[in-house]
Image 1 (cartoon, rainbow, N blue to C red):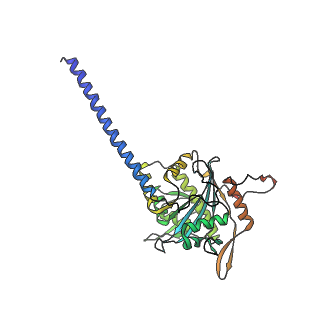
Image 2: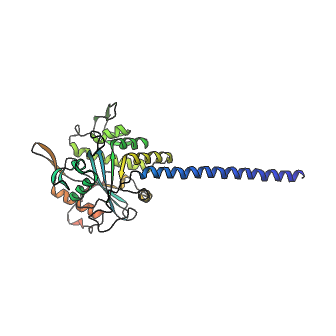
Image 3: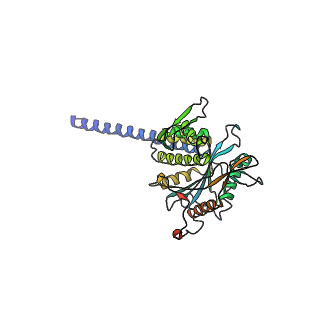
Amino acid sequence: MNRKQLKKEKKRRSRKRILYTLLSLFIVVAGFGIYFVYQTLQAASESYNDLGREKSELREEQVSIKSDPISILLMGIEDYETGGVNGRTDTLIVLTYNPELNTVKMMSIPRDTLVEIVGYDRDDKINHAHAFGGKEMTINTVEKFLDIPIDYYAAVDFDAFIDIVDILGGVTVNVPFDFHQKTMAPNSYYVYFNEGPQRVNGEEALAFVRMRKMDPRGDIGRTERQQEFIRAVVDEALQFKSITKVDDIANVIGERVETNVKISEGISMFLNLTGFSSDNIESVKLDTVPETINGISYQIAITESLEEAKLELKEHLELIEPRNLEDGNTHNSENES
């Protein structure tokens, strides 16, 4: 074999080695990718619980999260005093999503709102529904109160809240006024909030959304801070790039979040949120007034405000025809972006 042929043979062997190396790398990366996706889906799927209901009784047929307007009930569970068993809901937020409009309506229900507790045959604070009958009783009570179907739910405890915010690297919230609040960590400490934008970690974020004693509007002011926080999380999550942290979030969801949203549905909905930001979220107001009954303080929903909120949510879910509001009627919603 002459020098020219030897040179060609060396080049050919070199190409083969490079090809085999690249192929080996591809197999390793692909294998890791498949394993990573599998582990992530497995972890997140542990959170699934349909509560034995295929659809809301207020729906004639099942809806698709991919293409239909849907509603989601967010429940923040305060169960640290009950050892994780049927605590009260510290937060109740109803979200409706209209995929054609690519908008979300968001309404908070104050925790002390006096309502009929469905299945318990008494009127009480709405946050007691979960203590009496868990997530199912809470969903049924909210459906009765608002006269809309609740298609999906997500129940989050305080630990999940803290962990998810920390995995995101914190969030930036707009503090409405100066205040301080103690954290709930084992080594609790006071967090001092100053009016204006402030970056917070998980512990601090929980303190931000839970404080009400220093708020001149009590629980009403607190619900607005909770909505502000959700907007901040949406913007943070939609900028979330690190694939390794997706696995961390999936693990938290699997361990500490309960929902009837399937993984495939959640991914599909996320992929549909093209161009979505907190600007696409509108708040629906529910006005209440404080009232003391038999020595117990409640929030009583103002009838006109409640009825307007019902209509607005039903419109967004396309359960009724859109109203013509040019006759002087006004929407209850505020775009607080």
